[in-house]
Length: 178
Image 1 (cartoon, helix red, strand yellow):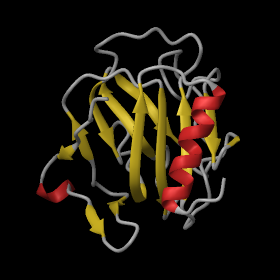
Image 2 (cartoon, one colour):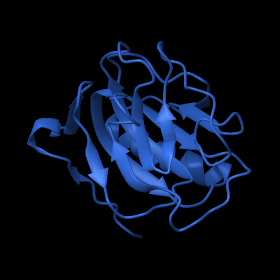
Image 3 (cartoon, one colour):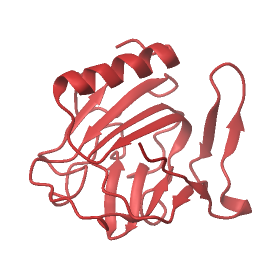
C-alpha cells in the first residue's frame, strides 16, 4: 500500500476544508486544486464527492498536465466526457460507475456519491504515465466545483468482486447508497 500525497499549489488555489462527521476538501470551481508531483499509473480510481455546480465546461475532478489532457472530467452538463486515447479515463473503452452502477453520468449535483473510473482495456501501464496529477482540476481552466471526501487509487484494473468490495466499504463509510 502506497499513500498518494497531494499538496496545495499555492495560497490562492488552496481548497477549503469542510469539517464535521464527514469531512471533505471543498473546491471552488475557479482555481482551487491539489497537486501530486510524483508519477503514478492510476487504472482504477474511486472518488467520494459532491458536485456543487456544472457551470464549468469540461470540469475535471482528476487530471494530469504531463502528459497533458488526461483525466476524469465531464462535459457541460453532467455526462462523463468521452474522447482521448486509451491512456485516458475518458476513452470510450473506459468504465464509469456512480454509486455502483455503470453509467456515463457524472453524478447528481448537491448529492454525495461514489464515482468509480476504470481506464480502458487498451491501457498500457508505465511508471511515468501521469506526472503532475491534479485533484479538483483538469487541464487549463477546467476546475471542479464541489467537495471531495476520499480518493482511493489502484494501479491495475480490479475484478468486479474487488471493485464491489471497495465500493461497499466506501459507501458504508460515507453513507452513500450503492
